[in-house]
Image 1 (cartoon, rainbow, N blue to C red):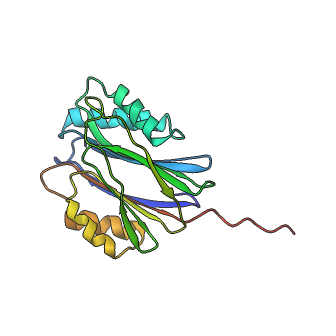
Image 2 (tube, rainbow, N blue to C red):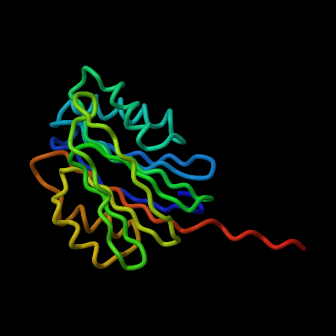
Image 3 (cartoon, rainbow, N blue to C red):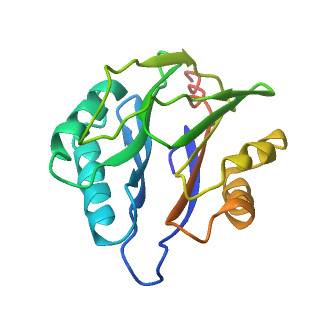
Length: 201
């Protein structure tokens, strides 16, 4: 956790004790943070390998623009099973959030009582990817971000009508909507805003 960001996640592999193809990344950097959910295609060791390689690529480029992070992952995952992923970058000083995604990974932003879908494009990172379109929006104190692999039923968006702290929301989404036929992961993060500057004595 950081003064600006609180997060929680819930995850499990399809087969207990095995590696999961669903991973998350939360990587703070100077003036911001990178958030991502990765879904290696299928499940099992090959999916876990692709997801781990994507996570390592992301953590080596945390301050890059989301579209650039996705492009780096595309190059790194060539020859693997490939993955779907959604990458968000929170820029605190600029009060902006930007994102880019490929494949079947769900993302939502809850801001001032409104829900906004964080749309991904069709494709497979590491195999076939369209020309990326990066999107951005104003970042506001209290914004809540919910990212989920396709091991979570898309119907989870209904539960977002009743926002709650990240720990509780992650638990509720996972308990209610995690599928039993795939790896599953949900990541919830809340932006608390920049800490107030202390006044001079």
